[in-house]
Length: 573
Ligand code: GLC
Image 1 (cartoon, protein in one colour):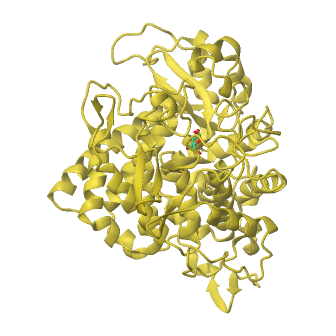
Image 2: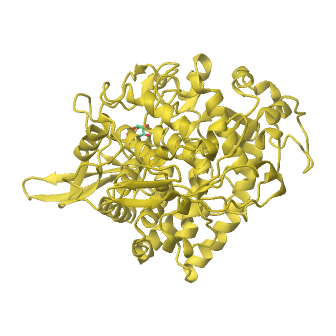
């Protein structure tokens, strides 16, 4: 099927791999260590959309050529790894996945597509989303709803399969929900708030259908879905990028929806930091888990949504005003995150030796972190080469836990510098047993236990150590890992993770999460046929098969946002 010069032929379509490579753009002197690296793979799909962007550069992965990672070298590049298959437009209801000529699809793929289609939710005859879980054996709670965050991998799977209609419908329906008057008891929520989830109500007597949304007023713990608005903007950009259809984003109602979300998160207040202050449980981890304050997941999504909005906002008077505010915030946010959330061996050693009670702008220990608050585990967890964005930073508080989603989104959005992205992947490789174990991937590491568990979770029996949000393993995270792997030129890591998932997922009926230190046991209260476990697997498979899909969910480094500072050698080694 493919020849050594990179020609890949499928269904009679021949595409030359060479045309996908562009010359690496190496801007800074410190990047000289990367000079030996292979040319990045240009994964752009829709030029038309890019050309109108302010600052987006061509998206490419820049594999580093390193002695420790010879597999990144194009000299070892296996063109079979990146088989391309044509994208065909198909009907949402009836079709099966694209045929993969010359590429024996895993038997799980067909079953996954069947299950994904079974999860479709229709409103007045049109598909508008996918239900969280089709498991009928357990109490429904709100798993019979379409969650905004859960729909993202489903949407990506449909976009990658050439089925954008459902994504467009979803974007427009949730936009309508945003304009509802939202109240919790007597308190009116912000205009821009997007729902956590919605469902379709059928009235058999009147034979009508209506939508019902949940903005947190029914959610367990009344948690605020801060991530929904960010995912909505990210999805709008993915749709635009993947289809080349700019007309959806340009619609006045979409522009307004975006501006309302942005008004909420760019508003001025008493803050001393550019990061976004949140209550606990306002994202994928939607229960009390000590993720209040400035959780990495929200900061990374915030950054990515701002960058996507920059590409999508019309350059009219209203749009321009937001563009200016976004540019300023992005500069401050990237500086803050890259400087203060970043942890590697050198930085850890510096914190360990911090002095406290420093006053004035010359303070080194700016947040007055007490070295005694450093947890024991972090010293063993930190590899010599590698690093990550820690969970949270605020006065006298650093949450050193590693969170998967935030770190992967940091790579995909280029919040992480190229060196930081590589370091995050180095850490994942070095700590594979801990983070992937028997089922990828830990939502966070490590688990909290005993006194800490009582204090942080409020003695939550669902979040006992190594279960659910407390160090549980979530198959949905496979797509984020795979995307990060492709962006950093390390597809072999994704392949290893996918193999692990393939040994269990189908047999176990696609659980929501796994429990245990190694993720060996199906989660205590895990739903079966969890849609984002299914879609996450499909997206991971499709991206590995055709890495050009990455373009819809990744942004290249913005050269205007220079790395804040160089903290340690492990960034560049
Ligand atoms: C759980 C998860 C949340 C997800 C929801 C629906 O509450 O914590 O992230 O959106 O289930 O699957």
